[in-house]
Structures are given as structure tokens and as C-alpha cells.
Length: 118
Length: 118
Length: 118
Image (cartoon, each protein chain N blue to C red):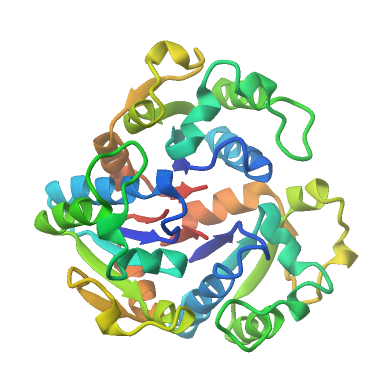
């Protein structure tokens, strides 16, 4: 399963569901990858996810993301995000598994059973 | 086919297309489920869909939703919506088929031929 | 692969990724169709894409769209867009391959390996 997350921190009600669904799928032993793109890439910038509380939740975004990683979800950011927002690898949190290009997303999507954008 | 509807009533131009596509697919005898999540869950709150006219349309959202149900589309809301907006089952319109958890969406998606978010 | 583009020119950071991914997929010899719907349909209106620069880019939206077409991507607009915004065929750029109904999107999606909305 591939989840493409495209909305950033300004959408408080959109933050938690992709992480929640990804964790559930990983608990079913699905191979789950989340690819952050567009303004969602900024959710993985140091200082952002640890200070962000999704709507209706008590845990920070970073805590929820760490829980997703513990059950096996992989976290990627699309390389155009770095260009778009003038960021470097060291600007991102250490929980990021890799920076990937569009070709990664295309080939992984062609291999996936389920693809979702959120 | 699974349609995940994620945008609420403030997006007047986004309201009608998922219902329209879902109805068309159901008319082709596809099994079609619409899952409302995030702020879209409020579209199913009593008093909302009967007073909401999608952009460029004359019928209310509720009328269009009823037509979708008549051709076999099933309507669900994700349980985190209830928590996020402090709602109970009786706050929703009677056309709602069920309140479902994230695991429902994950397993149905793994079974589906097509998944879309709108 | 089907990409459904649903966000219009007001979302500068959402413009380029679908075209980029579609082009990459087409370069892998995938059959790629982009269907513009909702306010995204206005991206194909004469005078719009040639004056629009996606966030972080230097080329116009039209130039990027032309490059996608050169590698084989097909460009469609959903017919409700014409009704919603009171447009006619001749209001759209010549790069548009066809105006299609919802049934086109449903049947193409049922045939597709990957479907994405952006």
C-alpha cells in the first residue's frame, strides 16, 4: 500500500488519518510506504512534527509517526519538496527513511495493490 | 470501488463528483462504497446535506446522495470523525449505512479494484 | 495509470507533481491519462496555463503539459466542468485531447492498474 500525503500542517483535520490507516495496514502485514509530497513534505522538517497536534488528538504528529514506524511503515519524502522549499537532507527528522524521486513513486505505485492520496 | 470523501461543505465544487461517479459505477453493477472521513463526515450530519447545493447544481446534496443509494451505493462514515467533531450516531442522517473504523477501510481497499480519494 | 487532477491554479504547490509523475510513467511505456475535474478544469482554459508558473519552477504550466503530451500523456477534461463554469469546447487550449463524461472515468479506472487523485 502506498499513501501519498499532500496536505501540510495547515490542514489539522487531515494529519492523523493517513498515519492511522498506514499503521493498521502494516499491522495486517501489508508492506506500507508513505510518500510525502507538496506542502506535506514540511511535516517532516525538524521542529514541525514534534510541535504539531492533529485535530482531536493529544499526541503530537511525531509521536504518531513514530508509532507507525514501529509497526513497519516506511517514510519517504519526494525530492521536488527539497527544491520547492529550499531544504536539505539534514533539515528533516531522523525518522525519514529516504528521499525519493518521482520515478520511485511511479514504479512503487505500479507494483502496489492500493494507492491513496490524502 | 471505494471512494473516500475527505472534503467538507466549504468546498462547493468538490461535493457532487464523487457521488456522481459512485452512482455511475453502481449502475455498471460495481459494488461501490463511499467512506466519509475528515471534515467530509460533517456532510452527513443532520441538517447539513438537505441545505447544501453543490456548485452548478439545483438538487441538494441529500437528494443526490439518496439517488446514489437507490442505485446501490453504500454510505459509511469513519469513526474518528465522531471523536474529532464530538458527534454521536443519532447526529447523522438515516441514509448512513454504518459507522466504520479504519480497519474496515484498509481491508475493503485491499479487496477493491479501484480506490479514490476526493 | 489514471491521474485525476482536482485542484486549480490557486494551489501553486499542487500543480507540477501530477504532470511530472504522468510524464515519468509515460516514459516507462505506461498508458497514462490525466483527467481534469472540479476547479482543475480551469487549468486548461485558454489564457490560464500559459500564464501560470508552478511553485518552485521556471517553466509555465502549459510548457510542462506540452512536455507530458510529447511523451504520450493524454489530457481530458470532465464534462461537468463545462457546466459548472459555463465553458464551451473552444474555451479550452488545443492540447486538450477530449471532453469526457463520468462514465469514461469510471470505466477507465476499472481498467487501470493505478489511479490517483491530486
